[in-house]
Amino acid sequence: MKPYLVKMPKFVQWLFPKRIWAFSSNTDTVYLTFDDGPIPEVTPWVLSELKKHNAHATFFCIGDNINKYPSIFQQIIAEGHSVGNHTCHHINGSKTEASAYVQNVLKAEETIQSNLPNSQKSNMLFRPPYGKLTSKQAKLLQQQGYKIIMWDVLSADFDTRISEEKCLQNVIKNIRPGSILIFHDSLKAEKNLRYALPKVLEFLAEKKWNCKPIL
Ligand SMILES: [Zn+2]
Image 1 (cartoon, helix red, strand yellow):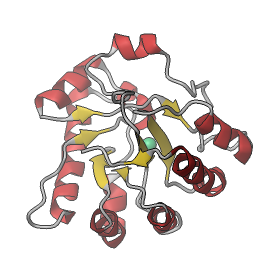
Image 2: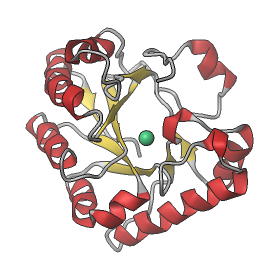
Image 3: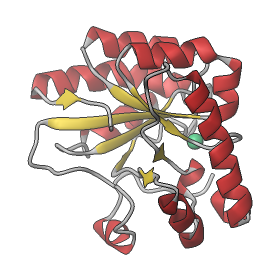
């Protein structure tokens, strides 16, 4: 596995000012995000944990998974969470030519739109798989109306080499008001997520920080 940064340095955020890394710190709100679902093994559990704390989040869904599990996708929406686009097949921007990349995103968008309730429009939120996106791909997506949502805190729940406690500490030590935090509702992340998420939600409740969806 390639090295990664748990706390996104400010200079990276300044290098790509048109991508959204965090929101104003002048708030009592944090933004939990879950990538790679929906899947039956993990996503319904995440939803039930969020519900216990009246917390709301943003789910960056893979188009293929929405097609396989539309009822879980619809449950996410019905419970007041926000959804975003995470491509159709979880493709890597640095390995995919720009027009093919955009096509894959737009195909996922059709799936999202066709599974939203009739009156609801897509929020046009996009998160690049692996955080990989070329400047050209970013520009093309922004021209389509997408907001590119990155993060400032990585739980690293996907890293099967770290302990569950390390995953929890990655979040607790770094999360601030306005933070965008990444988890994954995926099989790979499940072990760390099932440990860390309930404790993160308790930590946030003690701080009296609200969890709201990105709109
Ligand atoms: Zn992903």
